[in-house]
Length: 194
Ligand SMILES: CC(C)(COP(=O)(O)OP(=O)(O)OC[C@H]1O[C@@H](n2cnc3c(N)ncnc32)[C@H](O)[C@@H]1OP(=O)(O)O)[C@@H](O)C(=O)NCCC(=O)NCCS
Image 1 (cartoon, rainbow, N blue to C red):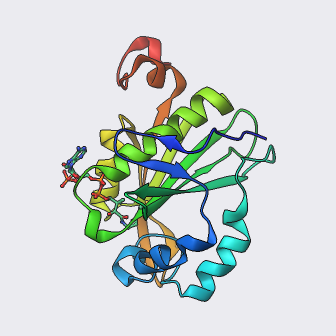
Image 2 (image 1 turned 90 degrees about the horizontal axis):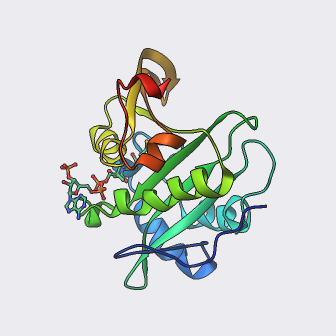
């Protein structure tokens, strides 16, 4: 088990496990069709939120099992404005993955980018993974820019590789390596990056 010290503090935000009292904050943005357009879930009701709070979101630690995941709420001034997820690799030498969903009324202030940095720190420094990736619908420009601001590198553009919500969609894959994280910047074409 990997359990961070909560709350995880960034310059402006707190990251911590979600709790029952967050349900109204969560449903406020997770019920919006535009927010859900490029994510695997459909707009959620309070019943959906409650089910997640009692299930997948109840864990406060990242279990050792492959593909286990940890969802944390992102708090600003006492309100949960978004949530972020870190997924363990499928095998010990594999790639971890991050994801994020934020309320549209707080967009454009860098909160998602800021909240993802501790996830990268957790993945590289606590889990000790070699590589972290972010996968997204190629039309999701705001999400691509989050990953670019984090210093992740565009590695793949798969064309209509996924039948998603009733249509063929294209996928972008961004990634960062542990040595790039340590260096504090992506190394794109460096011969030492192989
Ligand atoms: C993806 C998502 C989190 C991006 O939100 P966002 O508000 O664009 O991202 P951030 O909070 O990091 O804010 C970055 C923006 O704020 C601006 N900004 C302002 N102050 C900033 C600061 N202090 N630091 C960084 N960026 C700042 C940036 O310039 C950037 O704007 P730009 O993309 O137009 O250049 C959001 O659109 C979302 O939740 N979408 C729905 C769910 C989703 O699609 N999730 C991703 C699935 S792959």
